[in-house]
Length: 150
Ligand code: FES
Image (cartoon, rainbow, N blue to C red; front, side, top):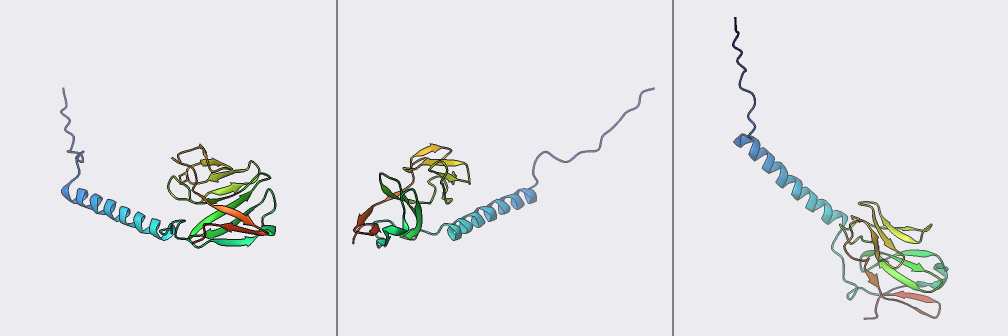
């Protein structure tokens, strides 16, 4: 004796029109929210050519030390080695997170996607496509000046 088994029609593998519209509206909303969040977290920056120079006493930057400033609206770190003083934007060149200075190995680290830069701002690992932006810096007497004179 054979038994015929019929299975009820299951859910369709395709989206209904209503599901598609809900999905599309959600995707548009998420993209809009992402753009808004990025604008709030990473506001447009002034280019270094427009920014007023930032000065501070050389005594605030000992050899082997760093100092964080805001230059042209950009969080900037000034790094002093025995050989030089350099200023870098702390904005990662991948997607704009802020990099952190790693004192132990004298390098920059971006925690967002494991981006890495050496002490000269050159990419040493991860997804950043280009080096950190570097700003002009000079010492006059006992004063450090980041940026160009207008
Ligand atoms: S934002 Fe820095 S590695 Fe992605």
